[in-house]
Image 1 (cartoon, rainbow, N blue to C red):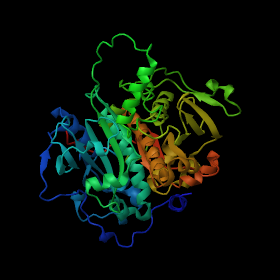
Image 2 (cartoon, rainbow, N blue to C red):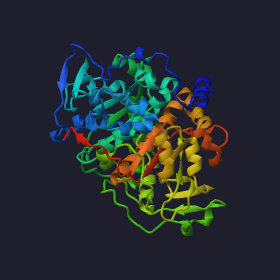
Image 3 (cartoon, rainbow, N blue to C red):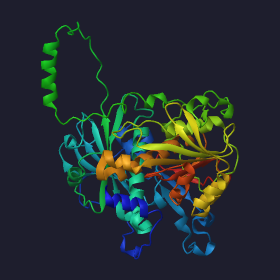
Image 4 (cartoon, rainbow, N blue to C red):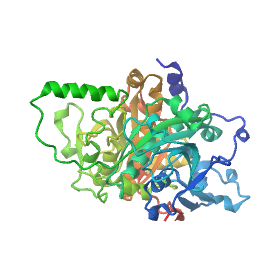
Length: 507
């Protein structure tokens, strides 16, 4: 048992006190004085530069919002706690992905090759200037990539940005955000304009080697994920006659090929078998089969627990990446359609192109006021696209008791869907050793972010919440042993006063 990771999971559920917040620097963007810079084309959306657009969609400063003190009230619970000495403090910049407290701990580095569209070398992406800062010259892709990749992206987390606000909880948030970043990368890398390219991610790699390559102090900034941008496929030529009649010669040749690349580690079976294409097909986010789901469609063939069949759905994650934002003022309380529920859940359980198993997290959810679906707690089964009833009844009071902040409690009253990925620590530790906590939290963050992107594409509001005592819901879900719900995302119709004045900076 990894005692430190297990103790951390059991003991850290909420932020801990930060004795001296002033000890952490206020600068939010790294700088490398004197290092060579390579400007990326601006604006990214119209420049036609694939790498520049991808980096902007991952970590760029892409939006500006004007907030009012009312926007901060749900986070402070009183007007007295809201500073009012500088009106300009309410003009804030945002990035494409959610981050705990808008601290934006994630950073991106680029290992560029001859076909990357930028100078070959190791670069840091500067989000404030939309520049690449060269840290090393030369082609270092082979240090990280396990297959021929045109470009390799490395995602890190700067720990002190989160620690300054959340104390001991910073590591949990950093792991969750790495999953969110990977989900965003896979969605936008294969969106419109990138049909001939593919991307794959890895969360298991030689951390120490990559940290050294980037020149980082692992105690301050951790390397969490690698995204490989694969080159376009080469058109196949005429294959000629079959050589199947000569098996001895074929095996001798295959042995030479195996020996020539002993370090190759392709994705595990199933992660690259087209599973993603079953749910994400680059459509308009439309929902097919609007017939209501309901108890009448529950299948009795699955034992004592009834299952609810959901309408077929085609979520469009790339479209959601353009419009996703956190619901600032919660939800209106309007009913949700079964089609919208099906779209969000299809993305929630979608298989990712990475090196983690599909069953690293289980896909639990809570439903209320959804057309044709009884209120209660469910487990979603992605392969069957069905909900399995876990606990019946109105969940709102339970959700309110687990919520810490006023905004989260408001969402418990007016939302329609709450997603809570569940992880089995024992099974994860057996497979990943001391890395189990990090990859399981990342898988949970990725699942919720996929769901948020799908929701945004069809006009459903969402918000990922960390201020929830999810362990209080575990008994209701019937979880035993070391199975735990990991975090929560809320979904519903956005409150009419929710959308804030916003200007997109990258058009």
